[in-house]
Image 1: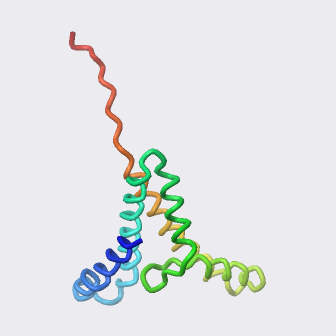
Image 2: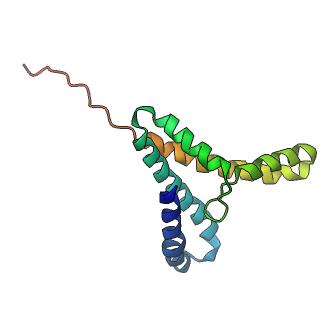
Image 3: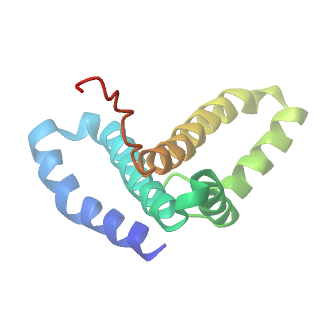
Length: 133
């Protein structure tokens, strides 16, 4: 969890300010989402390396830890709020566009976490055909 906060602070106060001057403020929210996905992919890679035999279990445990709390200042992850929004959307259809956008962002974030965990798997040695005898 500490790695997540450190990487996010470096991105927020270092790279984001430089890129805001280069790209302009219009593309900044999209860039923030892409950088957050990168941070979560790195965290997934670390989780996968720690739980090497069971990479997906380690990533699932990391995702469960992220789903419990509100990380709104650092990441666009707030799973308890998504549950409340889904409850509200069942009662009133005006919440459906907001719910769909929020679900897409959460799917991208958690997907990048699992993709990073998949990338941490050790490579298998290629099968050698011993033909040159």
